[in-house]
Amino acid sequence: MSTTHEPQGLLGMKPEEIAAVFAELGQPAFRAKQLVEWVFAKRAASLEEMTNLPKATREALATRFVTRTMSIAKVTGSRDTTRKFLLKLRDGRYVETVLIPANPALYGGASDRRTLCVSSQVGCAYDCKFCASGLAGFTRNLTAAEIVEQIVQVEAYAGERVDNLVFMGMGEPLANFSNVTKAIEILNAEWGIGIGARHMTVSTSGLAPQIKKLADFPLQIRLAISLHGATDEVRDQIMPVNRKHNLAELFEALDYWNQKRKQFLTFEFILIANVNDSLPQAQALAKRARSANAKVNLIPYNTVDGLDWVRPSEASQDAFLAVLTNAGVTATLRREKGHDIAAACGQLRLKQETELGIIESPIPAKRITIGGGAG
Ligand code: SAH
Image (cartoon, rainbow, N blue to C red; front, side, top):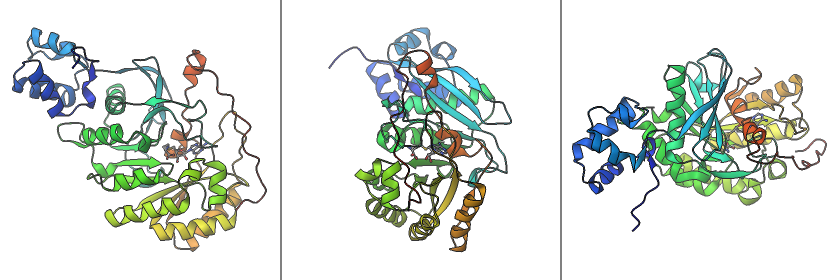
C-alpha cells in the first residue's frame, strides 16, 4: 500500500470514512466527530478554523483532507432572477450551477422553494442534439465532494439555504452513479446537509439499467426523464442514447421504478419545431405518460448558440399541451424565458473553458437534417 494519498474532499466523506482515516493517523475517535461537525454543521472552510482541534492534529489532517475543492470564479444574474455560478475546480476545469429563486410562478413542485440545479460531470458524453452541455464533449466525473460543495458554495455566497435540488446541470448523473448517490446520501443526512430526499430530483437522458439500480437506492428521491421524443423514430434523431436504450427498454425500467416507488415520475419534453411538436407526437406522449404514471413538463426549446433548432409558435405549443390535458395527463408548459428549471440548467456550457483556451472551441458538427412533420 502506498503511503502518499491524494487529499480527499471532506464534503464528500461519510463520518465512518473520516473515522477510518483518523484511526490510521492514530488520532482519537472523538476528534473525528468534532471534524464532522466543523465540516457540515459549521461549514468550516479551512482546517485552521477548527479551533478545538490541536494544531498537530490539524497538520496531520492537512496531509489527507481538503475542506474545499473549488472556488467561485464568476456569478451572473441577481437575487430575484436565476443566478449562474461558474465554479473553478482544483484541476482548472469549470462547472456551473444555477440558483433559481423561490417564485410561485415557477416549475411544478419547486414553486415556493429555492432550487439549485447542480452539475454531475464536467461536460457530457451523451450528445443530445439540442443541448449546450455536451457540445464540448465529456471531460470527467465530478467527485461526491465536488457535487456536495456546489450547494455549500452557493449557500455561503447567497447567505440563504437551498431547499430543493435538481440534478439537471451539466452531465448525466446516472453515468456517475456512485458519486451522485453518495453525494445524495451526504446531502440528505442529518449530520450532513439535511435536505429532504423528496426535495432532490435526479434527471436522466434515459440510462435504463441505472434507472433500475436507482429504483433500489433506499432514499425516496424523485426521478425525471428527459424524454423529448415519444417514438423511437423521433427520439433517435435527437438523443443518440436512444439507440443504446430504446423506448421499450426505457419504459421497462420505468415500470420497475413504479413497482418500487410511490412518487410520480416527471417527463421533460422540450418542444422543437418540426422535430417533436406534431400532434401525433403529443398523442404518443400522452399514451406513454399514462402508461408510466408520469407528469409532463413541456419546455419550449431555448436557443443555443451554434444550434439551429427553432422553438414552435405559441399556438402549436398550446395545441400540443391541449392534447395531453384532454387525454387526462397532468402537464405544465412554462414560457418565461430562461425561467424554467430544466431550460435554465440545460443551457450550461463551459464558455469559460473555451475563452481561456483550456478546451478547443466546440464547433457543432452539422446537426441532423430536420425532416418535415416528424412523428
Ligand atoms: N443528462 C441529464 C441531466 C441534464 S438535465 C438529462 O438529460 O436529464 C438538463 C435538462 O435541460 C434536460 O431536461 C434537458 O433536456 C434540458 N435542456 C437541454 N437543452 C435545452 C434547451 N436548449 N432548451 C430547453 N431545455 C434544454
